[in-house]
Length: 145
Image 1 (cartoon, helix red, strand yellow):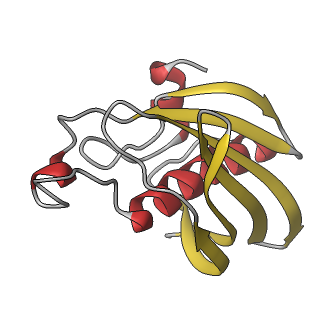
Image 2 (image 1 turned 30 degrees about the horizontal axis):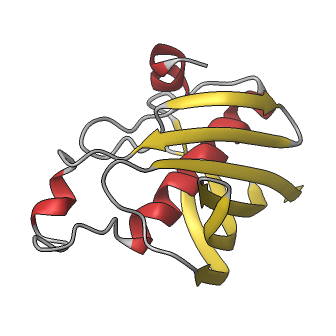
């Protein structure tokens, strides 16, 4: 999926869109996407100016956005004004290495289970084949009307 297709499947926009491309998506199973981390990211000016590091919470958010794309693709839907996926839980989060400007952050998310509107995912972020973060994520689909 290119950026135009991603924008159809996520309600996020700059500066909070954290998925640049989807390499592979198997609805009902898993997704592999990535984010190109550039020195122009707005968070780098304050985190940290002398040694720019991507905040761990944004790595988890990028994984959750990939999970959102997978969820919408699995359901055969796109986000609209009446439904969204919300990030509702994080378990077993671990950060193993820092992510810096110039890195390509790979996002691999696999559905563990889905019950009604609650989805549980196994998520791993990596750079150059090395795990930088991992977690179990929960998202909930909410109808806003």
